[in-house]
Image (tube, rainbow over all chains, first blue to last red; front, side, top):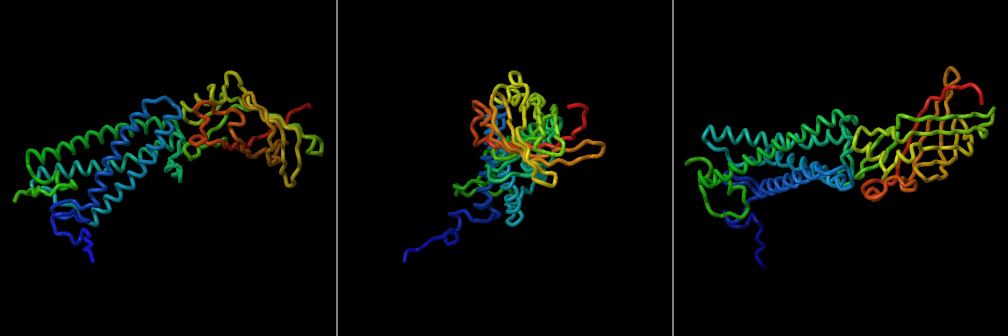
Length: 204
Length: 156
């Protein structure tokens, strides 16, 4: 009988565990991280593209997809946070300034990732364009249609988008900084295909 | 108030400018006549761009056809203040027969309230042409609900 190797059976260090370890992120956290990252990029492009279009079918379709994906993104971020609680991520840096900076930027990242879809939902309600998830079901409207409120919410949603872009740039920049300058495993522990051992973010 | 759908979700709006006349025959409701006209440019969805599009050539084309008109041809009593009103609805350049169940509630001071709802296919009336004719993204079915106060007038 051929050996049926499940990830659990494989020798340690040659596969990604399901759960996070002190050394690296597990496959679930990694999958959620990269899926969320990809969706945020798509959302940004859809949002900017739709905003530049005049009212028309093309914009309606772009925004419908933007809203469906936004709701999906919200669910994925909640899932990621829940998984984080179930399986704690690798430890923060032991250096206080780095730890504070990481905590702050991650907190801001999560806050924006959750606040953006909610602002979008409010904006959709105020704009009289109810959120539908790929045409399968609709979300209840949070507020009554109101053009003044919609105008204000659009500004909020947009400001958050640019803020999120700024935090993503900081997040990505920090990951490369850790990799190239500090030469620790902060970047590689979120990558699925790396095997090379690197010292952890904590100084020995 | 009307309700259409976009991307599978409802979108609602109202018309603020309308006028109507109900002539009630003595005793026999079949004698009644109803005529309602709605100024299509008074459409309000709380979405200024959408209102502009609805007034534009692809939808109501309010510049060419400022009024939507319903004119009754027969009224049948269904009992308990309910009536089935059949007549002609004109939107843009299309006139079609339509039947509307209404409820007539007498109010104090000789007035009354007339309420009802109807549903029709917007494309039957050429509402939403060009890119908007795609009913996958903008539903064909539109619901119209109304509740109006009638005031007694002298004469006729």
